[in-house]
Image (cartoon, rainbow over all chains, first blue to last red; front, side, top):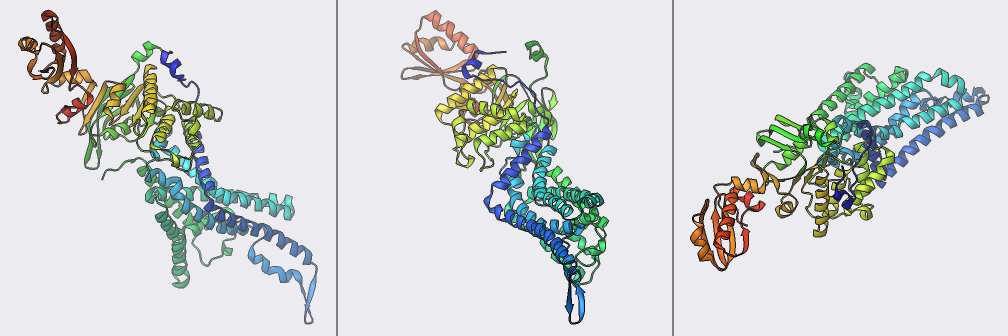
Length: 312
Length: 317
């Protein structure tokens, strides 16, 4: 049906098919990533993350190189000949050998950077939607509330994986190339799945938790305080209770980052005895705590994102 | 959609006995409203429940009681929002984005394929007159530019129902006329526009169909004339400029519905109860008596006056 005014204003009605709302979630995720990478202040933290990656990357290379160069050599201590390979055993402590602990440690350290960026960016990515009322712009589009949460989680998850899982996968590839690559990749395919599982775990838990806390406190400073409390204070308190007060290792369950680490190592089939901090709870106990955190966050989000306007 | 199909289709927007509480605060009280094609102004004082009604209509909040449907489908269903374009009052964006990026992002949220995002975004930017200014960051935009960008994102998916909250606020007079022309063009295409505005004069230029909200209730819905007719307690005042006021005054009291009159410098001010009957009788009277009326002006049938009467004011403008 055309009207004279159509011609006058050249208004052209839209006729065509639209994508399903999941695509909107992906569009939201890309916007979130753009916002994260536009902030120059974060680039110092990205540089730090890159340094950690290079430390592991060149560390792995160096360890293999030293061992190859000096494997057959011996040195004399007095009259006693000692093989060089015995002297370089301390390098094993660094776990720069393509073992599950290499990737566990790498993600542990990269995680600190990811945490700081997320604490700083949480308000920008999610809190502002509530603080300044831009949520109606999203929810007036043909998407459900779950698509909104999914979009935000995708953005945060993609960022976490860019800092943790993807570089860990590069280290995995490098470890294979430095060793007998065919046997390394075949023998360690479960490790590869474990790295991906660890990445997925980080994505789900951290993105849900960040969206929930950002929806709750909204502003940057309180968000940093909560995030620091969860990941720094709880870590210190757990160490103090278990190592200084000699309380049950179950107290470590209050340390969320440690729980992620434990479940991650379990996914990568790491030797549980070789976990770097002293007595630890069982991985299933840590997994239960993480599941509780996820369920709590989801319940909170379900309630909060329905109530756009509160009249006091 | 063919006209016959449209006629049998469920109402575009239907609120049935809708109430909304925010804790102990009753924001909307048993509101029933049905809208189809055309422009409807939503007017009422602050706190009357306009924002709540708009949020219910867009499905952003759910009613505590009653039902809100758009073309028969529950407004809270996300699929309904394919039919709704919403231009909110507040302008909270990602200030670091440019206007163009914002509209493009909103196009993606609407589900446009990546190949169509640019074309459709540019098209709506052109409609609201922002093509040349769209690359500036949103933080540098004036209030009027923000309004235009908000309107652009509401038009993206060519919705049947456009809900515009204070769309003219901050826009310069020339821009206002462009916007009014655009709204009229959209209404002429069979779209339904629900426009909340405090600027009653501008709203009157656009439509005379209004829904008046007061204290959470719909006080009146209809054209301004229909609503004015129903206000029996408030006689209408009409200023008449003529040369023989005494001659007219003699006959006036015989007219049905005339309550009284006052002499003015250039004629009379007449108070009548029923505007429709009064105007019909008045026309007949002046023709019979051969009285020359130079000017005639109703003093209180404007939206301002009607709103004033309904909400307890004097109604005089």
